[in-house]
Image (cartoon, rainbow, N blue to C red; front, side, top):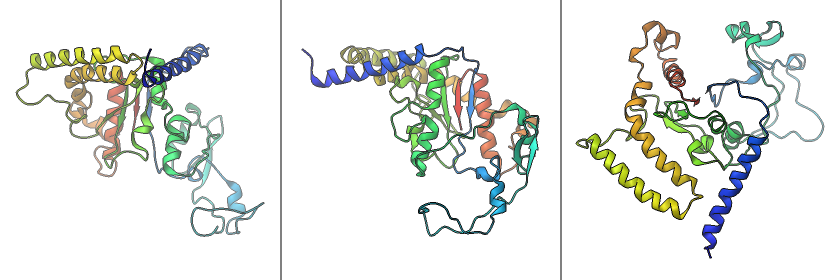
Length: 302
């Protein structure tokens, strides 16, 4: 005889395991990607001014917006059509059209993939972020970083497999739901690093606590949590918490070194824009991301 709460908990965990099993069985191709740096450019420049040339907008410039049925806008009333203010040029063997804003990216047109088929069923910022992170406009589904980490595994036992680097102004709309593991084990969720100062708050042990004392505390905590885990074996969040304590212990030396840019040359820092005030914050994130993937982190999201 078991309680209704325990049954629901274990049944939920079983459904997640079934989903993972079916997805694993459907994998027909060996992965080629080894690591990913994802630039989550919330509020970025318009697609119509960068890679999505709309010549019809130039032909009908200044004319009122019309079509079948009613036209609904978020605010005010539909205004006249306005073309992009930038010229587009074809690049590479693919003939990819790129605006004059990105001449260097245009020169590399044959070296990257441009996906034009992506769209969202919501124009709300939060739901659009969820769609970009997980493919769903609802919370509770695994993020891209979680899938990559699940598929490729971990390389460096002293660092998380999935790291999120906050912008200096804060996190994105929707917060942690953008890097959640969803129905997968909680160990695959993202770990937030700060782009300046200590990478993780409260990572350092309290003053006066020796390494031996800290190790004994972790051992005692592990015993208590193991008793709880035996009572709720399907609780992946508890298992992830256990591992997070151990990982945090190991990260005390690994994480600060990974994001310490002091060893980088002045030339490298200049390439990342650290010598200019308007590019330094994002350039610092990019350089930290590079250092993290070099040390075995599978997925870094900026």
